[in-house]
Image 1 (tube, rainbow, N blue to C red):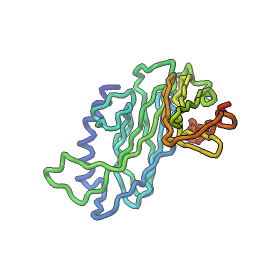
Image 2: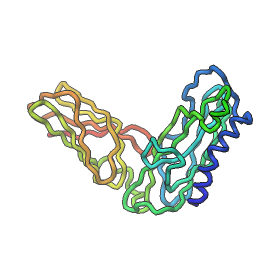
Image 3: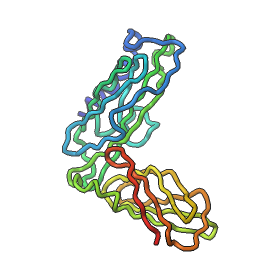
Image 4: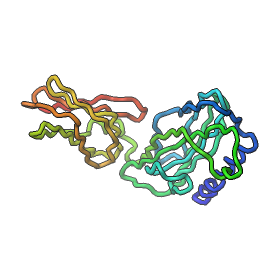
Amino acid sequence: MRNIAKWMKSCCAGLLLALLLTGGIECLAGESLGAGIFTSSTRLIFPSTSRDASLQIFNENDYPVIIQTWIDDGDENALPDELETPFVVIPPLIRLQPHESRAVRIIYTQHPLPEDKESVFWFNAQMIPPMAHMQTDQKNEISLSVRLRQKIFFRPRHIDKGSEEWADKLDCRAQFHQEGEAIINCRNPTPYYATLDKISLHTGNETLTETGSMLAPFSDKSFHLKDSVSVGTNEGNFIELSIIDDEGFVRKIVRNLN
């Protein structure tokens, strides 16, 4: 399976060039290129018991596009042919007519991954802009733009049950300094990745909000709130967590500071 993945990567550039040169995609000179592509979900939960999973890609543009797909392990700047991940996307290149959609398959190569916690990878879909012409010296250089990137959570079968309860187990506490700085320390004691959309501290009439991030399994993270606060006691104060669940919906969880 890994040999197949390498072969697909090596063929990708040649196939892309052929599609462009043979009219595989219509050239639209002078057109403004908007994003116009999206997938059927904001995240993908990949159970270890599954051999593959599917994502639907939609082209909302009024022109055809070519989309290159690949998966990275967290390095968003790495080139597709430099990556070694336990997944293969088929097809690696797709052509979509205006307002057309198509499914891509993400295949797990069975390369061993941790069995006691989730692993995270990123699915990439990069739209190749229409090109009015291509110079001879540009044939090996194809400009890419408009990139969509979303998480894939590989979930081992040993922890498949109980994923709906991880949010309630997050432990977040506020720490206040004399200078007025507030720090929220969060601990994720679960085997799941915790995705925080934002984290807010409510103290009396003040509300401080910080952009969230992803907490790895069995990890700790501190959030430094940018503004200062004046807090006498913890009575009535609380932390509000906006978390993103498996379906991509935002849930709010409150932690009282009393």
